Structure formats: structure tokens, C-alpha cells
Length: 544
Image 1 (cartoon, rainbow, N blue to C red):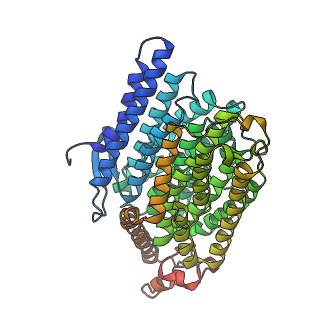
Image 2 (spheres, rainbow, N blue to C red):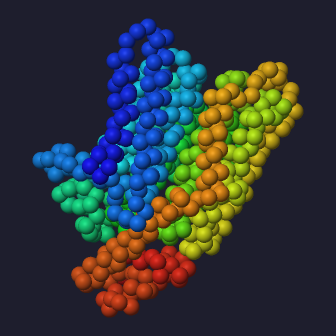
Image 3 (cartoon, rainbow, N blue to C red):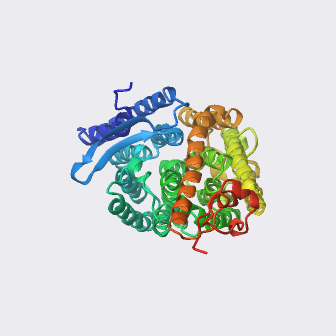
């Protein structure tokens, strides 16, 4: 197992399946049937191999595991460097788990250009898995940006009436931010002589450089999350994308930005992270409350769930930038939960859309009489979305709020109000679709879930309950990686302060560190935040 390049196999197996579909020959019907089968079995095999990562993952090892490192662009010192920790492991599993479900969900609904559709999904799986494995900045960028291509095609070719507008809006928003990240990566290469994460981590960037580099990475990651106010591409993309496109978009693509914060922004630019944390918290609170209010007035089921996704990702960014173990662990769990629950909700919408061909909430009502099994699954996923105890949504949100309360009571209180708003729009949607009077003739003849649909929703429901009732197997792997991230963050902020002090530059830092450095003055509370922050945050600010 140690000598097997397992990460490379898992990363590029879907690409091999995609190339195999490309060279298929036969009539259109035969190619379509074979393409579905090849895509399904390739994605199932990829998921099975990814489970080996979990089985052989050593929770006592805090360094990266399953590492592969070889020269990629030798003359420039750029490495093909892969590895995973407790955070990236579950995002790989989430990707490989959702991909076969997306293919199954598209089995009957996609009837045109089936070959190209299946190739796009397998290519996207390769790029997503590679992105979560990459430990070289330039390699990460290649995978990170490459995801744009298949998603652009999925929305633009198989989407709804406004698909061209939506796919170009999606592409331009994400590309603009990513160009700034590329400039930052090139700057890092110029300063350090490498883009390898292990090398760059040992380099101490000046605070002024940290700020600009942090903002450049933020421009890319914020769009991907998406954070307010650069979120407007998401509802359009969700509404126009085919069901499986919405599933992979909400389930995995929205996690790319938050993962980038954890993997690069916080460890590489620790002092800049502290400087910009109040801004992130404000934007997160706005996202939670504002998009929840917008969701309350939606008449399209997909658009309502899209706005709810933005609100839930607001909890994620809030948890990450509490820089507490509970907050960051809760953010990772929340990402996993949202990946499962949002995917399930979009699948629930797709199931009834395939029968009635409308997403207008006013066109529905009384489905409990015609689709009782569907109503049961839908209820579970709605409860998970609002964070009901016993479901996956509760675990992540409660940990984020615990972390937020350690930082600022007002921030945590405002975030908690978003949970109330979330319950309002989610329960209103369920009541309107499931329990209102059955009056529309086109609903009186629809059938309940078939075996394929029940299998898809059943597998997602099992994960919702497992993560909600017994999250410890997940936390056992996530917590060591989070603890290492937080401890390294504190260490590097101290190092930044120490370097500034040795240069004779007085700076503001946390009270605990002030006592150890006579050249450092000031012990003010960080941006008016509580004094207990001084034990965990060390702010390197402007010269005083």
C-alpha cells in the first residue's frame, strides 16, 4: 500500500473512463447506453478505491499521508505533489460518493449528447479529486481552474432556457477572481523560488506582502464559496443547471473556496488572516441573514434552495475564521453535511420536476397523498437543512456557534438568528409542497419513487443520520488536522510579531505575547473583541 500511488489512481481513473467513452463506436443509442454504464462503473470503482484511503488513514499521524512527490516542471522546481490530511480526506470521499449518484440521477433525464455528458462528469471528478490532493500551489491552480470547463459545459449544453447567460456569468465571476490568485502564486514563486506547499510554509512573508497575497487568494475563494456580495452567479447557475449539475455544484464545488481558506490562506498568511477576520465575520453574518430573507420570498424551489446554500456556507466561513478548534471542526462538518443535504434537496426537486416539468412552488400541493415515501425523505432532508438534533446539520452548526461564542457573543447571536430564518423558509416550502390541498390535475396521476430514485435518496438519508447521530468517526480524523492548523497559526503569528520586534518596529499583539517582547507595545482588545481572544489570537497590526 505504501508504494502504490493511490491518490494518482483515484484522481485519474475517472479521466481514463472518460477517454474510454470518447473512443466508443456504434449507433447513437448503443453509445448512450454504453456511456452510462462505463461512467457508472468507473465512478463506483473510484469511490471504492477512495474508501481505502479512509480504512488505512492513520489518525495519530499529523503530517500528510499517501504522499506522492515528483518533478513536474523540473527547470522551475515545480512539483507534482499530492497528499491528504483529515480535512481533504472527507472532501475526496464526498466527491467520489456524489459522482455515481449524479450519474444515476441523470440516467433517464439526459437523452441528448449522453456521451459528452458522461465524459464531462468524469472529467470534473478527476479535477475535483486532484484539487483536494494537490500540495503544490500551481498544481492546485490547474485543478482548481480546470473544474470550470466541465461545469461550464454542463450548464451551457444541458441547462434550462437561460443556460447561456447563466454559464457565462458563472465562468466570468470565477475566472476573474482566479486570475488574481494566479498573480499571487507567481508572486510567491518569485519570493520563495518554489510553489511547493512544504517549502512555502517555511517562508515568513512580511505583513504588507501577506495582506496583498491574502486578498488575492480571497478574491478567488470568496467567489467559489460564494460569499456576499459575489454570490449572485449561484442562484442563476442552480436554476438553469440540470439536476445532477446542481447536485455536484452544491455538493462539492461550493466547498472549493472554503477548502482553499483552510489549506492556503490561513497557514500561509496567518497575520493577515487575523487582520481580515472581522471583515469575514461581517460578510458571513450578512450572508446568513440576508440570503435567508431572500429565500423566504422565492417562488422557484431550486432558487430557494440555492439561496439557502449561500446562508449555510456563511456558517462555514464564520466557523473557519473563529480560528478555534470547535469552530473550524464545525465548519468542516457543516461542509460535509451541506454537501449531502443540499444534494439531496436538489435531487428531490429534480424528481418532481421530471414528473410535472415545473419548479414553481404554487403549482404543487398535497404530494403526501401521491408520494408518501418521497414525502418522508423530503422531510428528513428539510429537518437536516434546519439543523434538527439527530441530523447532520445540527452537529456542524452547533460546533460553529460554540466557536463563535468564544470569539464574540453578538456574532454568535446574529448567526443563530439565521437558523430561525432557515427553519421558516424550509418548513414553509415543505408545508406548501407536501401538505397543501391537492388541486392541480397534473399531480393526481404522478407515481411515488422508483427503485433507482429510492436508492439514491436512501443512501443520502443514511449519511444524514450517521453524521447526525454518531459523528465521532468523522471528528476523530478531522480534529487532529484542525488542531495542527490552529496551533501552527498561533505559532506563525507569534513568529511574525517576533520578527517585527527584532527589527525595532513596535506592533500591536495579544496581551500574552506582549509580556514576552519588551519592544512590542500595546495590549488593546482586537477590534473591540473580548479580552479572552488574547489567549488564542495574536494580532500583528500596523506600527504604533
